[in-house]
Image (tube, rainbow, N blue to C red; front, side, top):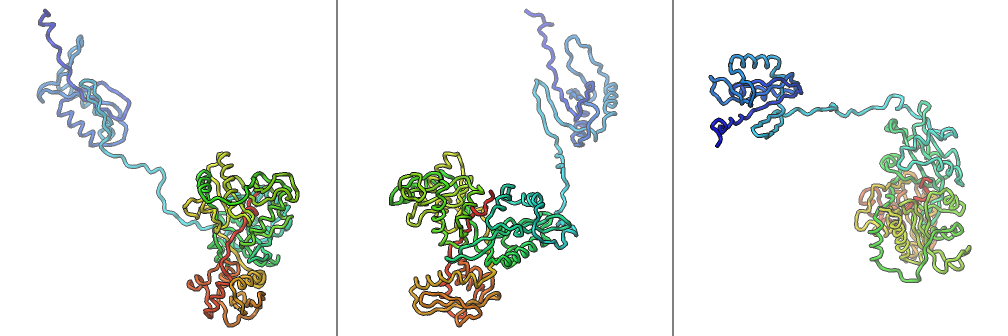
Length: 561
């Protein structure tokens, strides 16, 4: 048996309460009574300050009465600690004398009776730190020198580097190779590139591209405004409007009857008298989903076709298919063979797929194999896809081939660009909205209404004959910039300037441009107040003679090389 002295259990160590402050410094532990501990901890927790403390204080609670001296557990072999309250109290004041209550913050409270650690966050919530002061948005006004009137003139040969730097901010900036390709254009003229100078610096740019555009089955001389750009810090001072005004004067000197432009700032052009015709439709889609929808659709009846990459000797056949399809649109270019060869030589495409019917042999005159369709691609963009009108439904097969190649090349998306009236947009979108963020508005301005009306006269006569109208009809047009009439008799249409007749339309110059370009609905325009018909016959004639025609301006001609 153990002796009584050995069997006597050692006293269990009392739990100690240790309060750490926000400092790494340590001192010798200091003993307090329970009342002192509660009062000191309350003062520390109530202070809630973030100032660093100079010392750390260890506080151990005492279970004895307030009059008895505090006792601490004693380890074996350790000397007995003095129990005089006065000495402890003096040491307490000495330890707290160097530490201010406002300079101490309690970060954690640890209770270690058996090794348990409990941590707590500060009771007071620190205020949020604002790294940047909040300041109201102030509308910055350009300097006075930027508000001065700029000087617009033709660009010089030494301005190329500065112009390239200015155009680098456009969504599709041109490259140096594109500048060289523009010089090789069959109708290039250095005077067609205008720049706006302010204090010797180029702040704006616009390029005029002369073209022949198909309108109403005929061809009229036209021009395209391309790469209209103004320095961001100089915008809002009217420099862009002065550039467009100067470009309009230049186009009139060139003899252009109508001007076109693609833009994302259509309201600015509308303020200058331009008419908004429609949007440039670009529909994105996933090749796998497009291919599944095309395969589920109706199949084409007829002889199967073969598809492959094109050869340069097949350019006349591609031009033939383009001409057959461009006649039903307003806005396509009248591409000649010389222009088509320049378009191909500048390299603004990646591949051209052709569809052939017959034996695929190397043939110059399509005697053994006939080309019945083609597709022009640039990256993941499908810019042109047409088939011979004699083979309806072939466009779906060509698009299926494009999607199959995109899947093989691991392309996750393709963008189909065509007229908004093209039914293939529905197959690409798959029921989603056809309006895309990449779409731009097409605006136009008619400089010579008489010439445009004369070019559309044969198509107007054909519509009258197709409607079964045998008597002579006359419709007058009365606008601020033009007054005249068109008379259809015996299947022939003639235009007379200066007279409006009995049945006429009163409209603005902007609505007249939309009407002549086949983008106006007379009934809708009359309901909106943009058009007024003198008689009911005039409104009916306007619907038959000038119906809406699909709008399409080929993107391949404007794509940077």
